[in-house]
Length: 306
Image 1: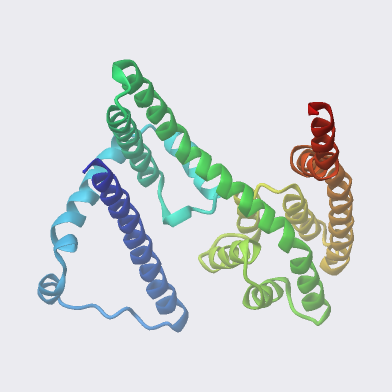
Image 2: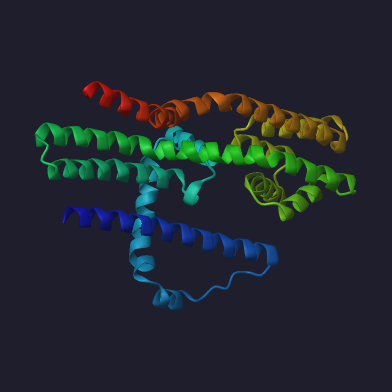
């Protein structure tokens, strides 16, 4: 019964997260399509909306929104800003806000200790064992959300670093073809997919909403924690300020980025023998010893046993 309850709880949690993500993505797609096409979103009368709305939209969703608003008022501003920075660096997974992340963290911190304590009781470890399982579950619930954000941030930074040379080449070719910088960035966004393409798309949207180019590009440096990307954005802002040609700056940046990528590849190649040493010693050498020395050892034992 405990296993079934645990499986049902995890399944419902995953299904709920999937529904929230799907609903937010569909909402954003509708808003973006309405913004691009210039057609206003079709609105239904309130009575018709309420009649077609589900139980979740009519009862549960307003209660959840009210609870989030009241929780946000009690949440310290510094804590909210810190969580928001982590979410931005991680790419805002599942479209979470700082309030959503904090509520999820509290829920996990309450759920994991109870599940761990129930598992300890199922194993009949005694009160000390149940308390130990409870403490381990509490620590896991406190650490796992931030650990997940760190993993997402590292994966996002690796993707951005991998995409940077191609983005630089496309920008250089577009500028040499006679396009302006904003048009070249728009062309790159339409041709490429990935972290940097999404960040440049966001900067273009911010430009359309009235922010300056310096503010829009500086936001990329805050959301992508990669030294090469930050140097690239800084060089663009410096070239715009001093009136230097963008093509020349991008050529220099492209050469530097490719040189650094070659150096990283050489560094990884130098680390490969050290990394191969551990599986050799732990798995391959014992097998070789068994194959080569096993028959001689058997013959040696048989000889001395006579």
